[in-house]
Length: 372
Image: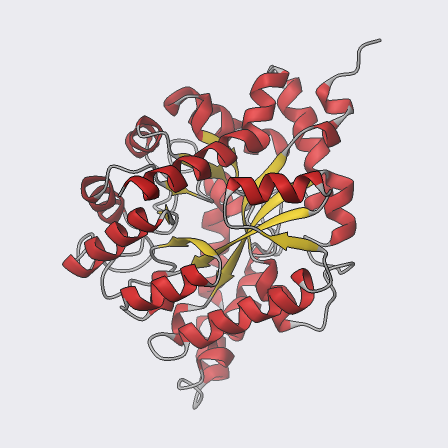
């Protein structure tokens, strides 16, 4: 009997657009070889993951003067715990990624998560590029001085002149412009500022889960029209609106407790960040179950709206407090492949979703940078 793609997922090129494993390795005395987090070498091998974009995430609470230092420490953590032991190879273009794959090594890309990291300085952006960083989300949960976040009160209403300069320089360098976490006005400004392909590395469809953090159909079409990329996020709160509401309601009940716990320590951003995360974890307890099929629903909607070539995986592993049932960590990609096949996707289509679309996008970003 002919084997299906679901029965041989290791034949696929699986390439995920977003994880926060660098933060986990920085915060805890863990080895990338084996650990209890979502990603380690054992889970990667079991799941067939061959390439991964690692986010260097810095809490906006550390802005404006501690963010760059934290990002550099995260980069150092990746060098010491992942690259030096040769668990993975740091790559900066598709050719290097292909070379790593031929050696059976995980190909690791580095992105900055949050434009606050560069401290309003295009020069710092260039420094990170020289260190191997090849993409950046323009915002995170808070506005920067030059771009609005989707989860903060609008301040500059899109991009400022500095924001347009930064986006233009990213395009010229061949650095991926990532609009996950950016407000609608910011995304629209990016689309007006540069013609190069852009990405939303870990965002879902607002039509299916109507929250500001997800993409409207118009933005899905606009990103796809310029041959961009959208990575579907596994976070249950971005998959199902009911879970998002439950977490919001639960978190609100802790408001007074958080106020008491942080009294007298409002000038300690690392402490505040940890408290926020701890209570977020507590808020997730007891929320509704989300299934693999509901994740597939977002893939189908994005593919039907923008075309199959724009959609892929953006798990957000190690940055989310819970996962869909059956997608507990990086070892679970074969289950996702089986679910795609069950929903009627053909092998050629699955190959695109699992990695080829993201690889093609990064190649186009590099080519566009050479032309500028």
